[in-house]
Length: 364
View 1 (cartoon, rainbow, N blue to C red):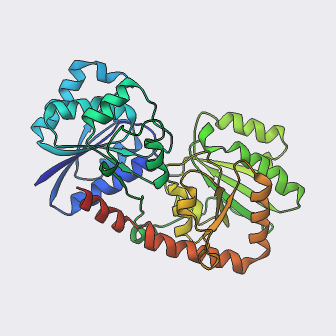
View 2 (view 1 turned 90 degrees about the vertical axis):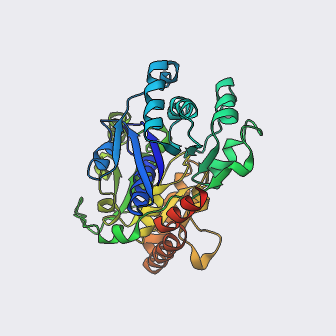
View 3 (view 1 turned 180 degrees about the horizontal axis):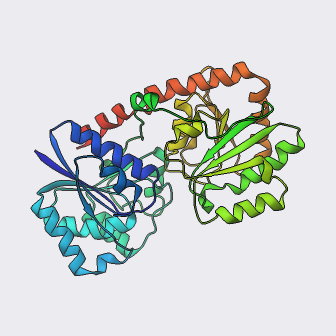
């Protein structure tokens, strides 16, 4: 039985952590792989894995832990004892320590699962890691794949890089019970957003959107799911711009379907996304989606074929255009329903977890 190790040391919960959990647990159910996972003991991933029968090794590392030979040695010893054949790593810090430990332990395939659509810096350590240690790379989008080679064409052979889109378990998603997280009033249009409250996610533009929609006379609420270091700053900004009554900060929403079932339109304001899981989750609930026309968003949102349109793309930071798309959907409920239905069909065909698992197995 082949032993596969998933190495993900982050405390936060995001697309990468969801991918690791989904793929690890589903491969384990096949009973032809033995799965072990390294993860942070205080992470959401660790909490969720504790409800499974998988072997979990708690790990806490920093970006410089690879300089600690004792820590590298401990990881290498576990990998040897577990007879790990393949390891999939998540963060750049994971690649440094787990990649070196894997090579030391004689792991056959050392795979970096890259989920960040930003160029890799052309530094000496990265050149060593990508040329001499990492054997393969899985990317979550074509855009992520493109950025790997943006600064250095010979980091790794192109044939060693494979794009495998994220997928969601539609069967489980459809069965998941939901609850009301916001009670709409006066026929408000409910706009949703989800993501960590950090600069990358661009939630400050939702405050600008609230100002524009207020001026246009729309009755609405914007629900923002997520926590992060910018939470207080965003709340203060909403007060200063006199739209605090139009925005509801929900905090971390564990069951994201609770959000998606309570909204009319989903708006993503991120400046970059390796793969926008939340767009797919909104589409699975037949909600029209709107996002900036950048990074991987055009790979998820279909706009070229009007009959199969799943949402709208707007120029970066152009909230006026996004507001117009919202008003277009509000004024034409049939269009909104049609787009929502097309979104669901696209998820079923392109972003289903069963397809993801098949492609991962084929890659192994």
